[in-house]
Image (cartoon, rainbow, N blue to C red; front, side):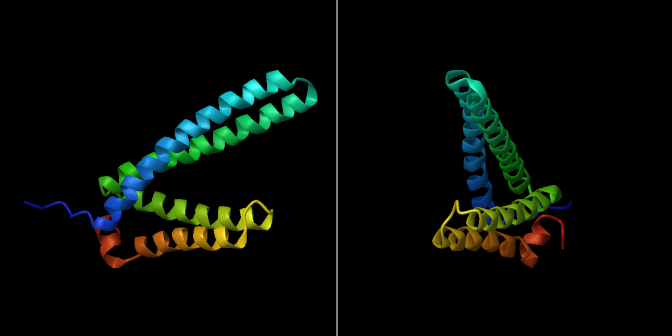
Length: 138
């Protein structure tokens, strides 16, 4: 009889945080989609249409990222091999997103460092041998 691998405490923490972030991401995305449509109707004209499209687009991105967080939460909790891939991909997207936010002026240097430290720390942790082994990726 084979036993299933035990989930490292760090993975449990990441799964719970991803679940919370995913819930807020989905709710925020749906809110932005709705507000984008409302803003487009209220403002009217070309400006309203542009505002509405931007709101819907931002909402769709937040919704996609929220669903990806929920998928990672499930994959990490159940130690699915694809969960590790989602975690790595999400961390890389986080690093790239933080750099772009800084470069286009939407983030200051302190938030850049904090964001890079969090995403980089998660990426580093996911590549630890015991974590990879727990996901069946040793």
